Image (cartoon, rainbow, N blue to C red; front, side, top):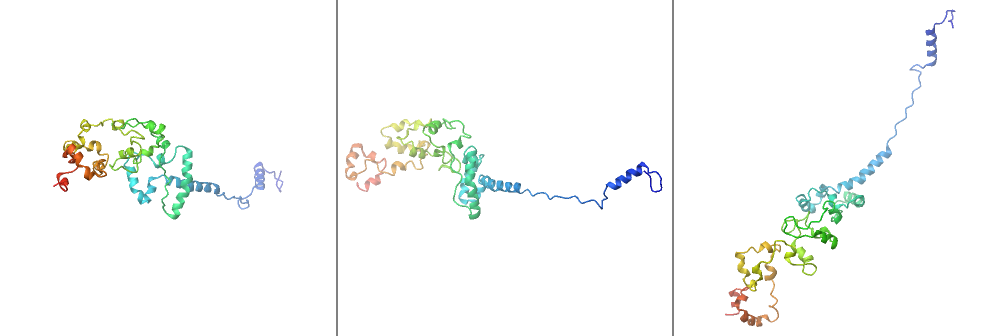
Length: 290
């Protein structure tokens, strides 16, 4: 090729010309089309659902959640000082397995938002722990108390009698018994089961260190037992009952019924006045007998 003057065109000039013909300058280049990024609606909705469903479940399993309830203050303080203080609410009050959590969640979600709108109510979602919940930690059956003084055949109670753990251990975590302990009350055991009919009421069948003292077997024990107060600690065995003396002394003996006031002289003459003095002093008798 040659230019208009007939001079031959150099190779560099030819390449430059071709480049200029096939290229666009910055001022003439068409603007690149930019597409707006899509807003992650589905992700936001999914996250919101997770939060709205998860928040109630997590909140209702936190001990701090129940600080809003003044009537639960004492129960929560008892939990903090109990042997179960390291356990979370879910450990005891939610059944083991995914079914347990789903069941709790189904009740927790509506209850949570109901209380958000209407304020705290008396509903209790944390039900009494079941055997299955207890056995998440207590994998074996204790036969003797930790102090060794009490026989406790747990396996017989749970598997044979099919008793719930919480039936006996009502004061284990959130409450204390009248003695301030977390152990079952002996009065409860005697009233509910060990009444001599449903289950044995013999002390030695449960207590490894308590047998009837020899002096209690004396024929005149009822007459002389008041004298033993100065030398014997009656409460060592009887303190499980708040007022163990009143259990006998607050009621009339079986013989003091009917026309006892007129007929009592006969047994009094047979047994002597010492029998009367087991309960009555001289002043009592002198009200009638000058």
